Length: 332
Image: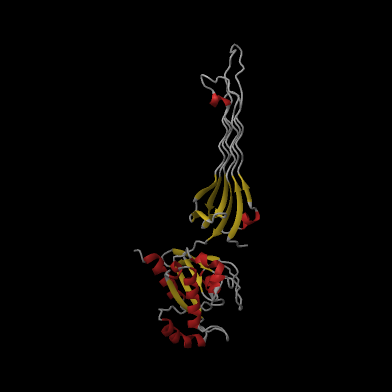
């Protein structure tokens, strides 16, 4: 099950208390203070790992606490520090302080880490209070409490190319044809309920990650439909492929209207998202109505198009060639 948001509570470990102790040794009648310090509490650390692609495990377990530091002991023995607690999250997780809505870290790459709660400092033992005028101190300090925080985690999938379009534009069919991904495909809208990822191989042993998102509808940026909550996943892509159904069923928007709706939703969500490089791919060229609609669609949108049929594979090679050129050849 895919989950891209989670709220968790983290608590760092408490520091150990300082110790009050005096030396008691044979032939040492006036042994001095030898109480050790308490150990520090463990930190809570979030780390991006490669083997996770959902926040579901964190949604099931919402409380995370690091271990406390041990108390100090006699003979100037310092208590052991608490072990840090490392909480694993998927790469691409954005970490925010939920109470202050403060961005703490964008764990965009595998291995990125952030300390979200610091352990409390250990208390001081009575040896710390000894002085020439205060030779038998009986005071010590308790360990400090560790930090606690409520965190809001938001996952933005990391993919090279994102498929966008209205529901039933053929995004899942195209993903299944280009990769080994097995998204749910049916002839009714909103069959994609969560993003799907697939690895696509091109000529020259070059490959890229392709992501299919739920279809957008008008008002998606305000929460309408299912695609709006996944708009943020497109933010990390380097390139978007906009699929347009050139043979929509009766009562559906025209191809040029469908193109306009999606473009406006991208702009309403983020200006940077609207400016992201894109390829327009009119789909369903296996249908005669689509071939007839293609010239008018080109004229109305003024965009270069790469027409295709996700069902038969027509035009797929041209599309892959353009994607590879944009991704791999632009910097050469």
